Length: 229
Image 1 (cartoon, rainbow, N blue to C red):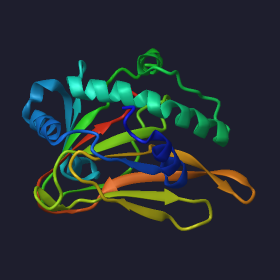
Image 2 (image 1 turned 135 degrees about the vertical axis):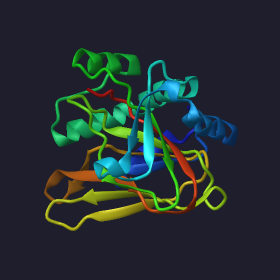
Image 3 (image 1 turned 120 degrees about the horizontal axis):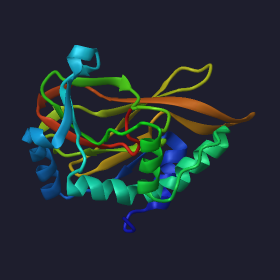
Image 4 (image 1 turned 120 degrees about the vertical axis):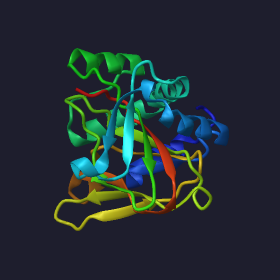
């Protein structure tokens, strides 16, 4: 983790609510993670998006214990984002601060009844898409999450861009399309982030989704740091 430019990542998150982490995962690790999708016994639930009006495609939430690479990524990325999350809350007038270690934050979630793990794998095929949404699962929410692209654009699929929208007070929403390659991750705001305006700091509301897949199959992994009720 120390090999990545966390100052640049922090600056990008502050400036636009998202930041690309290039080659977070190797191609071999991407293929291994995508291959886990067929192993039903490691998941706690499967969601078919069309049944719930979420879009088209499907995803599965992993069970505890998490696969090793997901466990290690979740535990090692979290400390790099803690200072940003606490700083954002302070700027927005939110009293919550976050412990330095993920285990302590997960303990806080579990004590509040948020017991279910939230890391997930997603699969999209032609015509599939993910509607704009927020991953909020209870009272305790860590303000940044990670999505890792496990497939290679142009080779494994076409279409399927990661999309982020930012709803600003009394203004039209701002879209952001984030190009990714296999193994790249995007860190982005789960719900809100602070923005400095002429009259002080204000909150903007963010949602994320995936545009329609034109061809092929697209796998991604999502790492959310808070657990679910």
